[in-house]
Amino acid sequence: MKLGNKGFAISTILYGMILMATMILFLLVSNLSFSKKSTDDFTAQIEKELNACVEDKSC
Image (cartoon, rainbow, N blue to C red; front, side):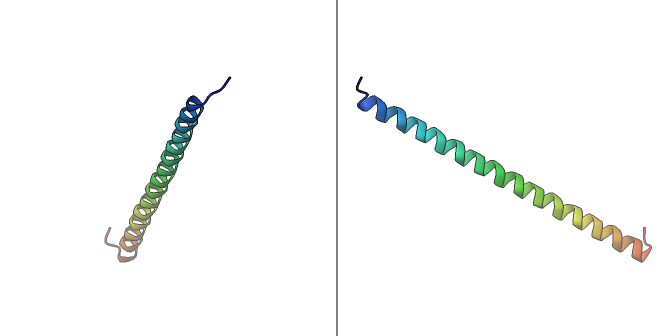
């Protein structure tokens, strides 16, 4: 059985799907990383403001 052009088409589709899945995975991981950093920065800012409030006794 000779695949010829069919084998080339199948491998092109498979490699394309693998490439797309890899790109989606990297985008998802980078998005989650950015979200965690934003949350950590927001939490640190709230903690800093609360500590300043306690030190000034303006609460």
